Image (cartoon, rainbow, N blue to C red; front, side, top):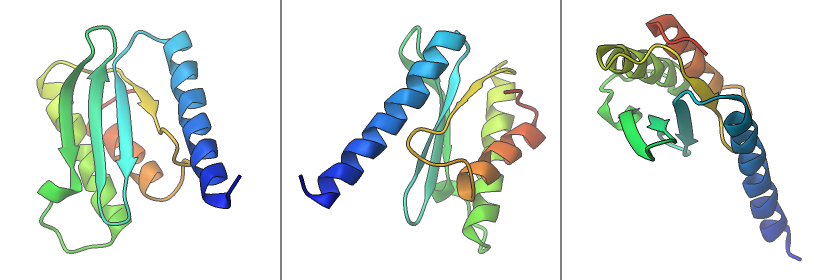
Length: 117
């Protein structure tokens, strides 16, 4: 097995592990994160109805600052949009990404915006 396939399989396994833990614990909507090299995307998903409730990404941010600061802005704006729709509690799905850097900044921004994890 090539090293690329091993890395891909380990990322997929990590994402499934995180998501299965969330499904066992909660019926709350979840914040799903995707982090590319350039942008960060976040959406709040209702798994019962299989529907995206709120979404926001760094593509919509016009600030010229560091990527971690942009991720914090994305978290705050996502929280603002969620509170407008009446969503106050969510569970955090980091997916295959480790909880540090931009993922952590986005989570902290969402907490500062008023969401509870």
